[in-house]
Image 1 (tube, rainbow, N blue to C red):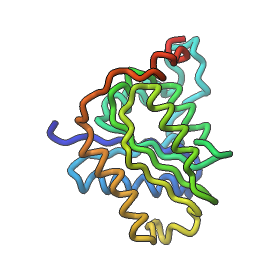
Image 2 (image 1 turned 45 degrees about the vertical axis):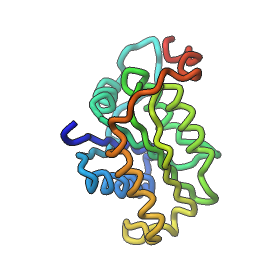
Image 3 (image 1 turned 90 degrees about the horizontal axis):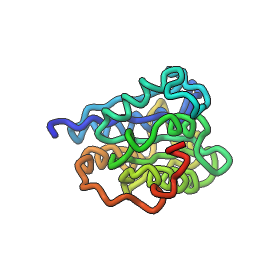
Length: 192
């Protein structure tokens, strides 16, 4: 692979989204490691709530094309009620095994309060159910409103952790696929 293409999917609709800012840092790390990058802003796509009776809805074909053509994907989310955002869930629902199977996925979460571990755990489970290869390294930004100044992560160690997520997405784009997981064989909703 000449130059891996890394796509970051932003699960926040806020104009001043810290998730989007953090994903820009992750993509800077991916670019530094030799990848091309693309930030998918879900505010710019028409993605109605998934209705499985239809093959395509709104811009769902555009989203699945972007994810399918990516060599690796970084999912970014704010923490809502201990989990990841509904807008990201809906975007993932429009995708499936074709887009995520055997694909490298990085995870990033931001929280207004305490450490956003549960959102990352929930995303990890969903990605495993889609047969994605989820990077062991993940990035979490607690107390996010104090983590940024003028769009830059102020803590050097935290900024390095987020940028490493992007670098790892490039480094591990060619990871050898694992056999399908138990979760994916039990994921009957994906075939409905």
